[in-house]
Image 1 (cartoon, each protein chain N blue to C red):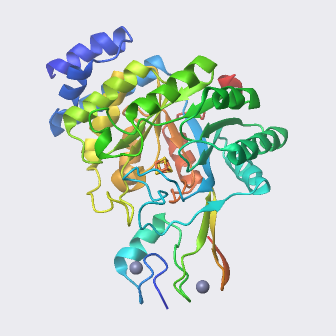
Image 2 (cartoon, chains in turn red, blue):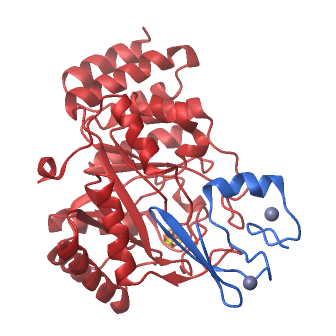
Image 3 (cartoon, helix red, strand yellow):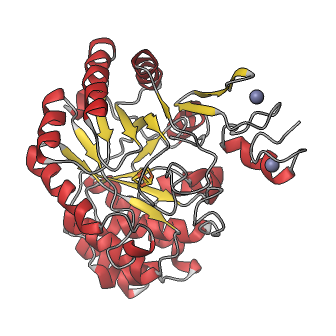
Length: 331
Length: 55
Ligand code: SF4
Ligand SMILES: [Zn+2]
Ligand SMILES: [Zn+2]
């Protein structure tokens, strides 16, 4: 067995401590022949420190497109020639989306807006939307609305938003290659305020934006330092019209190595499949990831792209004998 | 007829393949960019001239 896996077995599996940056990099560099053993170890770590349950989530875009920021992967930036037009979802449709999500057995419903940070109109919509959902649907509400002020953090917590998503997207050293309209540190500061408010912190990013393996390891180590409740892992789906529109997609085996490495960096976090798995991993790879460290997934469609039907994922979980986490288990 | 993914005339194998995981963006009748709302179980695309499409 490669030495790094021996080390991880003791440090991560037995002791519940994450690998450090150098260790994560070694894992990302493991040759293909060591991949099955790596995935098995990451799976053992997930089973020991998180259990067999899988947290299922649905997401919806409350405000799509027309964003003033320039995140180079994003089809919702108003600064690129992307075909995505600005549009708002009305409250009845928002509640309907929450109902459809709950019907899959999902316990999480995340409301997302393409903004730098919320303005009054968005906060008002959120207040009305969260209230309407809580009256009609038994599901936990999360939000992702960009950078927040301290007042907005408190307001969201008071509305009953239980988890806030704000992705660092990539490591600190690569961030300026991805976004120039705001800084990694500004994102970090929102995350710090969210943590202090008592809301759960959800923070992940996108792999395959041109970062090196060293930077992928750096990113995992920085996330581990943040210690978020949840880490959503996306793989770039190159969007027409964006600066990253012509990038190659991540190779399946590299994606699996990354999933396992992130699990070994953060043994206890909720590690979620987010966008891109359909293209990067396909059906077989999706299964491999669930047996290699993943313990949560977004089901159904994404914000501007489509996923595979929720039923296909739920069937897969049944097949793998992984129960969907229930609401009673999350309170 | 225009491609509902890229807005160019005709149909394109690459676009047809990509459309399996994307909603349409251009009206196939007039090539206007449509307003598209994606929700967990479907999507609605609206052209001001030609109305709603659902998927
Ligand atoms: S802030 Fe969000 S919506 Fe705006 S460009 Fe960046 S990723 Fe896209
Ligand atoms: Zn086309
Ligand atoms: Zn039209």
